[in-house]
Amino acid sequence: QAGLTQPPSVSKDLRQTATLTCTGNNNNVGNQGAAWLQQHQGHPPKLLSYRNNNRPSGISERFSASRSGNTASLTITGLRPEDEADYYCSAWDISLSAWVFGGGTRLTVL
Amino acid sequence: QVQLVESGGGVVQPGRSLRLSCAASGFTFSPWRMHWVRQAPDKGLEWVSLISSDGSNEYSADSVQGRFTISRDNSKNTLYLQMNSLRPEDTAVYYCARELDGFDIWGQGTMVTVSS
Image (cartoon, rainbow over all chains, first blue to last red; front, side, top):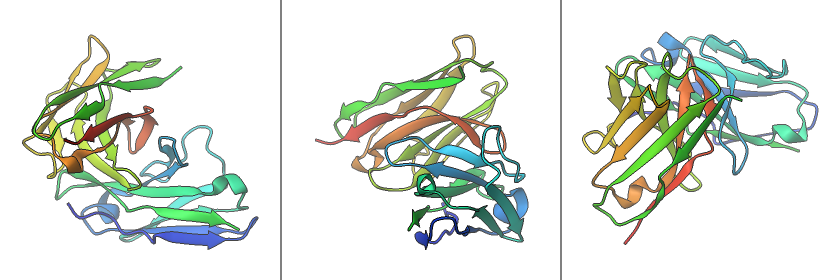
């Protein structure tokens, strides 16, 4: 099953802003939106944003999600050392009747 | 607190079977769609299977279709994954997750290793 496309790695300086992208198609991101997850090494993923771009309770306002066409984005402002992690997007694909994930982006905070 | 706890992982030979369980606590289990998601060592997340709240609908990834079966027992607040004809490429940490427009609650995962 085809997945979503994410850049493998992004590096940004402390206190700067990072924007991570996730590209799908009209059957998944373009139709249903994308959810975003953060995963630190050795831990389960944590939901950062629902498909409707809303944040779950307890997630910092520094994390914001958006969508334009078939591309979803996650913007992280005021980067902190603890933001260094792997970030995944996910979406329901109405054609495949399956959830699809992106390959993940490793964010390095310099 | 809201919690999912997986169990049943281990080392198994290719071609054999294994059943994973996921016990839910701290929330009402029955209204939620539930999933299994796996992660091979040093790899990304891969969606495995989904079951509707009442168990009447199931969907699975092509990679496990016909070999894995998801089920649930709402009276026991438990999700299951029956894995048959296991292959080395099924080696991964298996997570159960709750879903509402995204996977909002995850278990800690259980490791499955398929090796002779």
